[in-house]
Image 1 (spheres, rainbow, N blue to C red):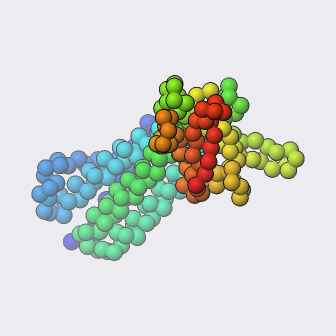
Image 2: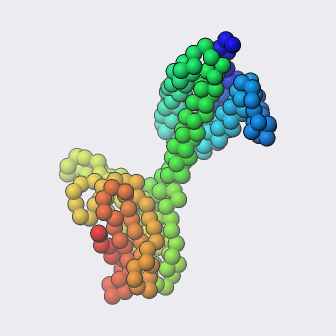
Image 3: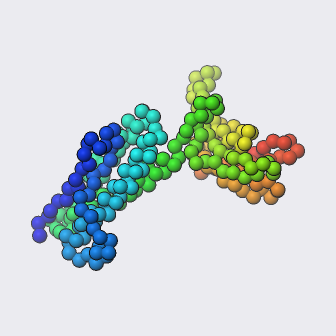
Length: 246
């Protein structure tokens, strides 16, 4: 049987506006019938339905990520997505060529697009969850979305702990600097980001988790995934939060 190339139908440009999305698949397949698909045509239709479902999830992730960006970020995301789509399509054509002239060629191409679209969707979903939000009333801190944790960190009150980044410019060295701020209720601790220092994080991707400090108060573990984590606990004598490191 001659190689018949499948070409998903694109979404109308007017519906996209400024949002760049992936093509929609015109065919739908019943999940039960796909379990028993035997002919090449049935398998292609089922694979196309899988790609359509992957497109839908991708479009949602793209829209959510884009909504959290400013104009510059949206333009960069659009350009990156255009480049990614061009790469995906070229790579999947390369994989289709493994079965050149055969009936399995379309399946290879569609399966490749589905796998790459799902992987790209996971990247965008991670980006959307990790987008920073600025607080204009708090010294230019960019708080990491979803970073908050709640516990009685001072042994008395339920407090929220969250982490943010503070970009600054050091006039003395004429260089930009980055500081991580960990706010615990109305208290806060600051740590430099970068540099070979005991009081500095190695990277800016910092997560907070609640730990058992061995005292009446739960503690906080602040980890950038690269250097030793910081451990933050309430010091009843000093009436302040103090940190230590592994």
